[in-house]
Image (cartoon, rainbow, N blue to C red):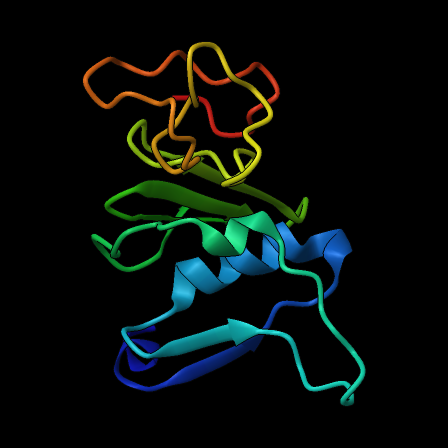
Amino acid sequence: NDTLQHSAMMMNAGSAADFKQNLAAFLLVRGPYAWFGDAWKGCTYVPDRPALLDVDYGVPLAHCVEIKPGIFARKWTKANVSLDCRAWEATIKLHAEAPCPLHKPAPCQWQVGGCPRPACNVKSYSKSTSPPPPPPDCPFPP
């Protein structure tokens, strides 16, 4: 729907159980002006901040398309996003240069001569050498 591409959009992140699906839906349909987050639930409520919120997905390369019945996809400069609405399963595949959200800034949990990805600000990481591959548990393989 081209209308969403020309108006502001606000979407609630939902629950932890289906956060990735809600994020994928947001990335599929958002236009240039959008907000994705948690609703106000009182002054004492502090929402969790999933690591996927800190990933730079880039900018969209095209509008969302239905690639199969009930499966929608959209390409971004730094990721490919899809959502299977029938199975309620999301796929967010980062391109090789995007940091894996499992690698927190400090301390880096997986180190072989430094940090595996530049986003994991460990001083021993040398940009003059290629980082080692991510660990097998990384949900975003290169």
